[in-house]
Amino acid sequence: MTDITDELQIPLSSLHEWMKHYREFENEPVVTENRVKQLELQLVAKEQELKMKDKKLKESEEEIAIFRKLGLSPSLNGESLSCTYAERK
Image 1 (cartoon, one colour):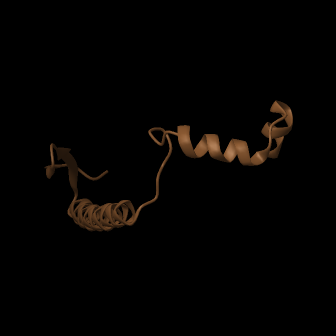
Image 2 (cartoon, one colour):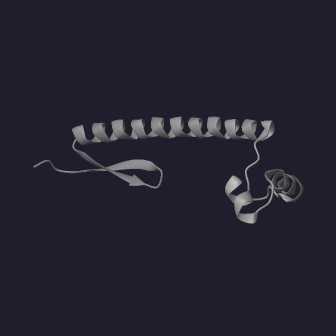
Image 3 (tube, one colour):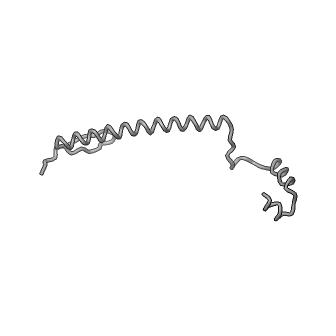
């Protein structure tokens, strides 16, 4: 801020006063207790979503491994796995 005051040749206190009166926070993040709580809740929700997706991925990988051991060719149709018989060579 001293760079600005030097460039404009004004006292630092004047700049602080102007900022206090004219500053708009529309484009600046304002940290409040409610905002922090909101972000914490979003984080918890995203962590739970990630755990669910990881669990589903692990289950799908296990199913694919089983299908392959049985000589079946797994494919994904929408949200569920299906398989077709694939001859081993």
